Length: 607
Image (tube, rainbow, N blue to C red; front, side):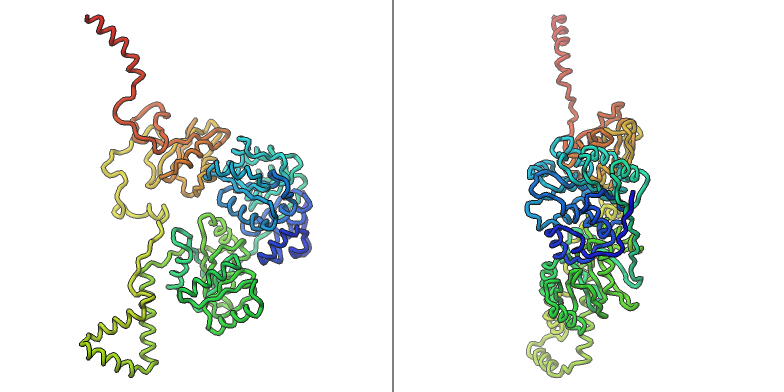
């Protein structure tokens, strides 16, 4: 393998990208590529195979997407580029990024295919002849076997997060897919680590690849307190408003991804009473400088900005940075939160993260070498307490600083005329002042707690699910009571098929979109296995899981009937979800027919 090291970092405009791709990059505000991009784009444009080692969040998606999109023929109506990703979340994220880079390529279609999505939807989309496919190994292989995905015209194949695919047990599927691709196709393999098996795959399927290794040196300031809120049922804007209510901030920058989002969010915050302004690349230099100057003078409290617009900002007042939208890479994150905590001062950084973006959270923690703590949204009592405190402070300051003689006369006249209680008058005035921001707690619809949080509650806090029911019986050593909120399933893949726990976890996490941390106990038997999964699996997802292949065998997943009587036949202990339970009456129609001749003979003998 050869290694190529550019002497200096070029600009995107100097890398030879196709004009539509370069236009999209420039519109996004990027001028200088990250290290992995600077080293990968040129060889990939030349058609070379590539083996890249870099951490998640270093800009790998653009490193392969920009050059490979530049080589695509949009007039050809067949898959030319295939990206394999270990999880459905990453596949969706990569597909969205590629779509944004290719928005000026007229006639180009990008299709993500992954488990958990309806097969019918994907089949219809495949009939549109997409040129770019982004998928998980299991679902891609499923389409290849069905004949609905043909790779005969494939030009390039990307293996993203190869070590993660190895860990999840997908490496065999990946090799099977590689064998289905044309011999002359281009291959790019990216991985955070390079275990021996990944090197062997690279040696077997890559032809004289360029080898690139990027060392991550990202770090953050120790004076910045970093927290994250996981996006749940609560709307992001509502969550932001509640955070603003209780956070004691002087000035704040809120980062979003797009120029349009800066204006929209700033307008909504203004409507909620916050002094805010957008700052983006579409604004001329004078307008941007005016907004920054207003913030420095205390006339503006919140700037809603894109990465490009916030470059070089150094405002002492900024105490908080909110990542309303997750940045594309760890370097952008560090740049963003660096707007606070300047010159040794304390700063606060809050990150909004969705479940499918958790990988970026882990990448940020690894790159910054710091733990980002999870925060809970303020509840209605917290907000009310904060408002009361602010009201009391404002009241004290007004009494100390203002001449209130005229107003005392007004209230005195009202009190005498209406014989009103002075306390009631004061309460009515407080109500009028705080009418738009009530001091009493307002009930919010709280997000449903995570499964682990629900399980942490004591028995006295939640009723038993099985109250009044007989205890479940076990069949053999493989079946036992599932954890709360879980159900036990049987899959027809076991040790004799070469299955390991990681194979089952990888396949089910990928196809069902279940976080591997939410998959419960697994018991491997000789010719089958049992696995605990979150209860309430949708019917269509269950049917899809039945067809998933693991170790060259379909799962044929079924729900264990743990209330069944003990039996030597393990197959009698399973049933499909939502199947009506059998009544106590035996279903022996066939045996009844068999008895009838003997019954007739007895009648004849008696006569």
